[in-house]
Length: 252
Image 1 (cartoon, helix red, strand yellow):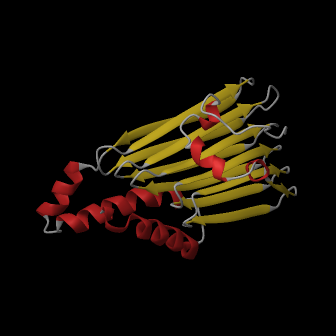
Image 2 (cartoon, rainbow, N blue to C red):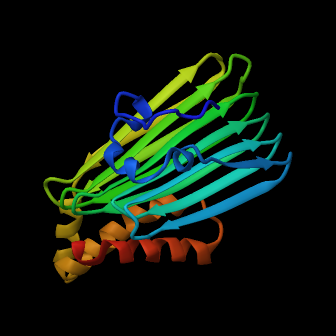
């Protein structure tokens, strides 16, 4: 991949909603720094990200190639810094699978985002991405997910699911799914919704004696838990969810 010679701008689709001004606190070498990972055929790779630093910018970029029949699983809580971005570039060989589950959280004037580019380069590969965003104040959560299916990559099965929850007016959540499909025997699906807490569910819980604050916490917890449902390690699931709830602080 060609390295950027200048700082990104919002003219580029993948930086459309980013806090590009914050990037100027980094040098170009840091912006062009990609972690390269090669997963051997049949192997499984899992990584968990808990972003909670206090730096102005937290930028993580991973480029992963998944060998035939291999599996890549990445789960993340993005609740760090003024501007925090996890960017994933994934290339799938025959029968490989990519699983991504992530949540963005933030208030004030923060921007947290996930940007993914999944290339189904060969037949019978699968991918599933589940992203949840919870924001308040003037916080912004973004998910830009691009899926490319090569001409000969038949039997591809790819899915994206994004839901944003805005706890206060002024917050925002943006989802930009992109599909570029050249094969004809494929199954690709994406969904994106943004809204507020389910008032009917809150009323139902309150009618059964649950305090409003507790009902609110339970609903948000269930909302976030969707992102980690595919993780088969209950301990790690709990750690991710606890980390996310801690990041909410007094927002609930």
